[in-house]
Amino acid sequence: MIVDSVKKGLLSGLNTTWSLGKVIFPVTLIVTVLQYTPVLLWIINLIAPLMNLIGLPGDAAIPLVLGNFLNLYAAIAGILTLDLTVKEVFIIAMMLSFSHNLLIESGVAMKTGVKLWIILTVRIGLALLSAVVINLVWQGGSEMAQGIAIRETAEITGVGAILLHGVMQALSGIAQLAVIVIPLMVAVQIMKDLKWLEAFSKALAPFMRVLGMKPNASMPFVTGLTLGLAYGAGVMIQAAKEDNVSKKDMTIAFIFLVACHAVIEDTLIFIPLGIPVLPLLLIRLITAIVLTMVVAYIWNRTDSVQRKEAVYEQ
Image (cartoon, rainbow, N blue to C red; front, side, top):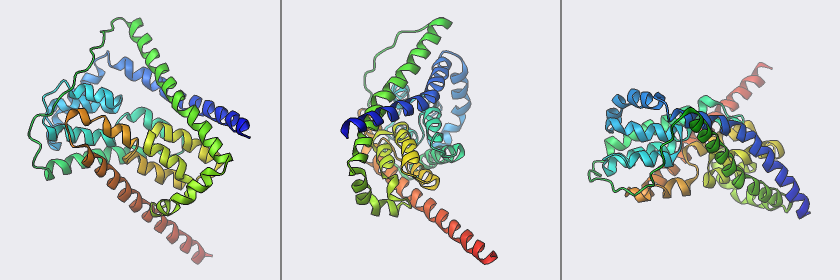
């Protein structure tokens, strides 16, 4: 049975990698190439005047743009080029915890059937709201943030070299995805066939009910929470096919995950910058729980009213 489970898991992993790779490859290629054009600089200059409204200097637009177009590592590289206070770095870190790698993560999230406007509204809205609240509430953090050394990368020139670099970056992104997703799908398949997932879902059932979801959404939920949206999407796509996870539960799960995902990596990555990371994690977690419970309550209430109206009309 284990051999059959491994075969099914490998096939699911390859299919999922192919499905998500079709999003990751073009987006990574385009964004990587844009780094060597005036486009990103133009976007940074456009956003810079708005930074003062959220308690940040104009050049803080650099890590914000890099983080949203690329990833947190690119954003940290941008932060290290600036003279920022602990409070300013914390605001940037909080914003990017909610809103980063928007193009790729939003693309793979859409593969599960979640609407793009929901993903972008939640992520960007939470980023802006958190920045405003932190700027108004936190009166400390005026000392300068500490920096860490980063490697200098070789400058790339020439259209051919830039395109080749973009293709290599895109292929690298897909390879990194495959290294995580394929073994993960094999493990999920084995746990399904051994009935471990059924027991796991039952154990998480009370918490899933509090968040307004059914127990069968537990596996993609935990995967996204620990590993990130892209990998959570892979498991959720499979769960939607095999476990009949409803579109409603997928949407609610992703509302939680867009606010709080990859909690280990996305939290630890900011430690070298000298900011308080425990509040960073707690704010994300509490925000995700409250937001998900509110959305689930409103959704369930609306469904209940519509059902009563339908019965009344009959």
